Image 1 (cartoon, rainbow, N blue to C red):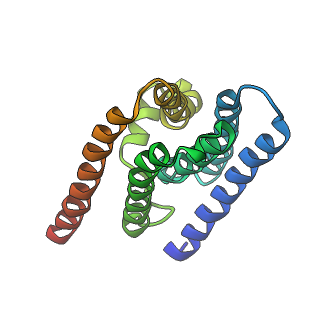
Image 2 (cartoon, one colour):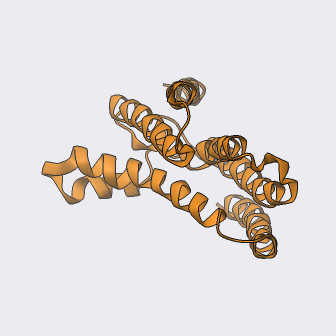
Length: 188
């Protein structure tokens, strides 16, 4: 399979994952929006997991780290009414989107196709061969939805000056990673 066709399958997988999460959120109604986001994230993860297993390549999940968090951020701001607090929103959103674009672009540029799987994923699966299905799901795919879930809890408890400090560190780290990634790939 060509890289172009493989990337098309990735787009199909993520469109299906986003649709599954959005479908749930649309019909979830009122209630705890943080839990709704967690459930939608879990459903999207399950969709990507099905694609990963179907293509025997857990690297289908690689782009999840950078595609889904910005979408969850938009949902959280929209449902929590925080979109009116522009400073707080931009202090979080700008570095997150900057990071997401950088990471997704870097992954798409250097991913070789369906035959290429991140070297860590087989290690996770092979560690417990009899539990390979479960270690692939819980060890590679599912632990990620918990991260944004708990980050949102922290977001609600801090004030603007703290966000400004985190913003500065985050933006500087992401900028450095642009340079570091380009330098690494230029040298190899």
